[in-house]
Length: 161
Image (cartoon, rainbow, N blue to C red; front, side):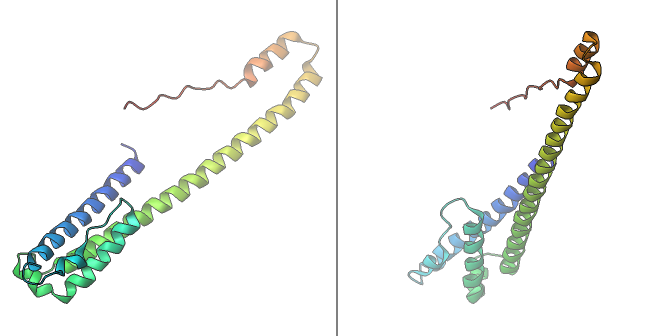
């Protein structure tokens, strides 16, 4: 398994853990709302599948839950659930930062590879002139040069669905 796939898997796991915590808090808020009408409205689960939405909702949950932490504990959540939520938020943010840094590094590497290939192609075109000027009278040498300068493309395998 590649490093980027492993990081993505870890990030999704952290996001899943964070979302699972929000579901538990929402479920508890709905139970509290039996006696406090409308209380669950402060704990709406995020719509959509974006990281910023999940983080924003998670921070709001933590802020609102902190106001009535005793009630949540009375409904069976652990005494440190707000701190656990804060830790999950931090872990998810770190995973997002790591992904962003990885993307930037990959983009930079790809640019460096493209630049190196372009430089190599220019060098071969320059050598073409030299080879034909020096060896143009020897058809065998020119043929060997033509074979040597050719770069075969390697077919990429398509991922299996």
